[in-house]
Amino acid sequence: MYRSVWKGTVAPSGIFLYRAVRISGVTAKTRGRPRGFDADAALDRAIEVFWEHGYEGASLADLTDAMGINRPSMYAAYGNKEELFRRAVARYAEYDMAYAREALAEPTAYATVEKFLKANADALTQPGRPAGCLSIQGGLAGGSDNGQVAQFLAASRLAGEQQLAERLARAVDEGDLPAGTDPADLARYVMTVSEGNAVHAAAGADRARLYATVEIALRALPRT
Image (tube, rainbow, N blue to C red; front, side, top):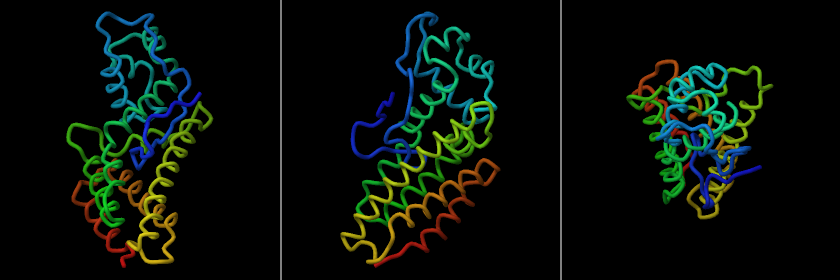
């Protein structure tokens, strides 16, 4: 089934991710939970594991150890590993990537892209969190799921790209971007910069280097 993560028309994302994500069996169950179990706190710890190790690299032992529960409790509360990952991505989009929603609300196309790319660079290099982005790191290695997780993440990013394209199309209609600007192409360019920065951050690039890339990208934006 499909559960809409966002009730409004604008959804945040790792990169404007997740207007809706496919999550089967996401309603948390109560059977098998330890006393005092905090489903959201445990999910936050699962995010850290998936973020650091990716979907394939995160073992069930890693996840249950970090979450402070045993396997039966994990299955009872979240379903299987893939369902846990989908829930983790939805929560990550809601809280860690809320800046994308704010960027879409900026009054100009330039301000939208600037706010998104700079806030994204901040998020990719946030102290105390894994470097990079869960939506990128989570699906880099394919494996036993026949690529379903990578496809899920790619579809989510595409939905975010389309949201950005819609915002840029409005900017063209309002005269904020030059006539003839292709909003889909421009949105794809912005997403490529963001996703590239995510890969570089995971490889050790610091915030200053990501900001330098952002500044070059901003100079390339069409202006009226």
